[in-house]
Length: 63
Image (cartoon, rainbow, N blue to C red; front, side, top):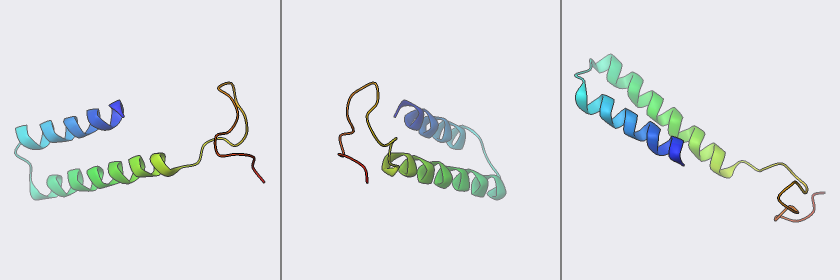
């Protein structure tokens, strides 16, 4: 979560402190959207199946 908030803060600071051309603004918007999609992917991605050093798999046995 800290990396997510740090990335959003950096994008906000860059966008507010620098006058960018339309092309640069589009690049920043694409970067922001890609960042959001990657973050959502990490939220929904399944973890390693089976037990690990922290205990059994909370989702139950795998097939």
